[in-house]
Image 1 (cartoon, helix red, strand yellow):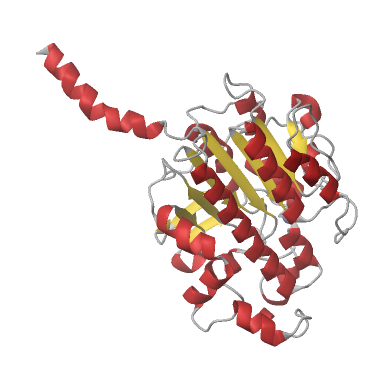
Image 2 (image 1 turned 90 degrees about the horizontal axis):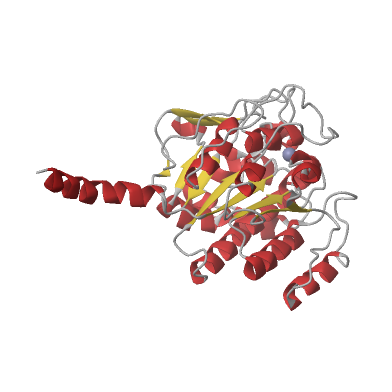
Length: 359
Ligand SMILES: [Zn+2]
């Protein structure tokens, strides 16, 4: 009888256990200050047709991103998101459907936002983008300390402050930022070319911030060569163009990040190391205002705490665009990431609960 029960339990528990541990790799992508408005609604007519915010030929813009139906419009702006993630993954944060995602911190800008994401914790002392090395431990270094993951957790960022946010001086992880070459004896030809290329690109945003295209190319070249288990890619073009009030460029930057996500996903499905065992998480670090306040964020800008979360991977049921009432906070992502890999993240501070429904 006992044997029978054991056999019964084995076969019935097997799918549950197997399901829990499919994710071996996680890619987490940050889109700096990209609004939920455009993600779920596509180009905003109040801004797209406002001459103040668009400098290029409006016919070109209308053709590229305008469509009267909001559902078609959002797919035009982010085809990978709506053709792939919406069908095979999860999208949280469409406030028009009552599904809310917010940052927990009270500052609503970059360093505090990323710190909350990776530490799983809102620290009120972290209140400046010039804040020195982050004293709070993050989930990336926690994973890096786990057997089989050591040296396999890496970051590629457009913005140089990410080195302080992740505190690479404390944990020694690879955090590649603005102007830095990837080093090492075994660099592939592609990696060497990308190192060179970044120094020949225009300084569109001034010191400290490189274009996302090169951050992406360097990250992908690294992925192909070294197969990290966890990769954090931090994009910044969307926030920079928004601060400059260039809505056309902001939309285009988002469209291109969508294309990069598609490229990355396509590559991973061809590489047996990543195929069917990789989960992708995509989020911004903060939101921005509505109407004329779209260019800005920070605690004085209403709605700049409104964000979203996208997930796609083998452990996450394909819920698509989540339309039920709900509330997620950004301090939940770190533990969500750890749990996807089968770990429980503990640190020198409290950590937010994982997002229910991701696995
Ligand atoms: Zn930002």
